[in-house]
Image (cartoon, rainbow, N blue to C red; front, side, top):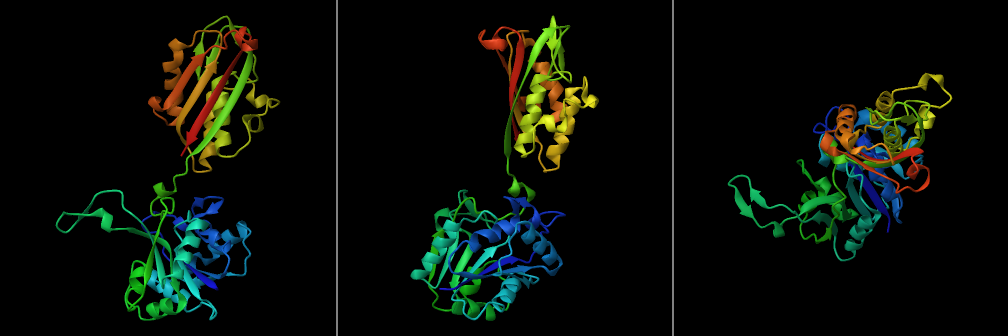
Length: 368
């Protein structure tokens, strides 16, 4: 059995915003490339036709090259003004030896290989197979607000599978625009269509929030203590008879937080960005370094959603200062204080921290 795949990607993302959602970051590449990749791993797939708006064909070629996809099975066809026209253009470009057609939305980057195989397997006892998931919310008919039995309905996903002769005949006769492939195929009489249960992860990207992929990072820092006039923790100066031994102001929890943010986006640690042998950072304000760290995260389109910090110190007493620490971090992180967790604990007189010779901190950061 030879399989032809049609990736419907002819739209211009008008509902998404200024950018074309198909080239927004997803997985290791972009939405459209992630939608293509699983099909290349399926036995029997001999052609993948990407129906795309002509103004984006060069961008697709660059994206394929960046992901090192040089598979000769992948080809581009011109997208139409509607989804139906895009698929119809691709059908006419299918090689003659194709037996089965799979159609998949280019805006569904999270399709699994397992779902593709299940859809193909359903053709053993049917002419076509539609993927759908049961709705979880109550349903009404908008025209008259009549409640509907949601058990009788399904939300259509892709891929849609169909035997080539039936699919070709259906699209040849399609004289108007349809929203999906099953509507087109059902115009052909006596077609047996199977139902395949879809996957929640196989969502279609429509709005920027659909691409929300939270990232988590963790960080750790420790500094020795020496005689002095106070320590700075989370931007708050705490008077006491010692200070931290450090290249900058020695703000241990902020340094741990900076590493958490950097590791969340896959970057190197703060020593790479702010080297200890660079005199520019002598006595540096760690909150200013935190701002620069956030700039790095923004290059990846990410910013903190919430952070959690644990400070480990035998002295000084930190509990009275925690609220002020949150207030100092909140405007810089752009996170309300209720999403900033700071706790303080001792090391139970164990090791250098327990003997009062050092102070340490752990931090985690959730970025969205």
